[in-house]
Image 1: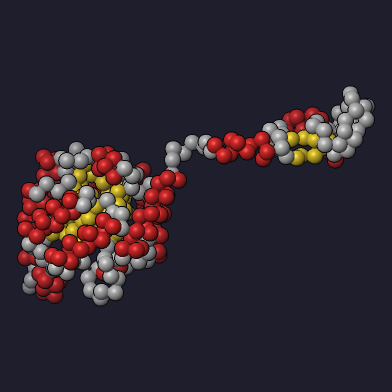
Image 2: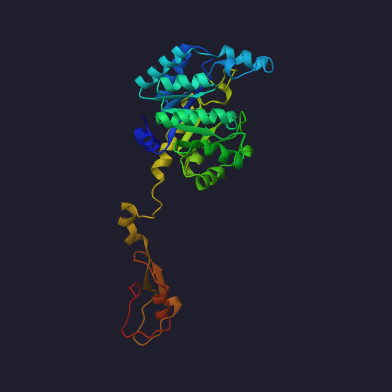
Length: 330
């Protein structure tokens, strides 16, 4: 089982990228397998599903339409176990959002390394407590999504996870989310308020915000995944297709390369060309011994090692002790 550090080390990258398949399989096991395969080809580190028994999380009397929709999207626990095995055969981490206690217990039984808690459950405290207790005993990682919640609510939810490997995901629970709805500076706020890995669960139509989130320090990116954006159902319209998911992954990996310690160092190339790039003081004309040096008599030219202002000022109005030629170093 992984802790968070081991999880990031396993990917050999700084950002843990998750292809959120969720319910895009439409209740079709073979399509779910295809989605896993395509996500692997697109460069993801993990695939995530939603696992549920509809009667355990929707009231059919009060939410009949939603109940019937989700009932049509169910896969059996046996199928999810097969999908877990298939993902692992491709060297992908498989995990899921359990939407009821039975599904939580099932995911624990098949030893998925991560439990993802949906934003809609951030105020369901008995569920949070159960996830926390199981995660503690089995050393699981928990990703907590933070849509629907302000900071006070998030702090209370986090309090249930003492001594648990917890990561927070900044999230706006809107589909699709637009730029006007997003505040990526929340990632910075989370980093300051909570001493744990921070991620971004993104529901936008683009991947530009994911790249920006990584540059701000997000360690986890969760993005909906589909093979076809034109499928007019479920989360397909807000998902990335394989081509765009791969572009996102490649861009994030480039950001990782360009994000280092924060120490301002010189590249080998800069060191090599420094003498040709810096300036030096040279005489602008032939000057005789005894003449005073004026500002106009000094040229600041390449190559050189740089010019200190103190030295420059000390030379102005100084009398020359010897003759100097144009372009001679001062």
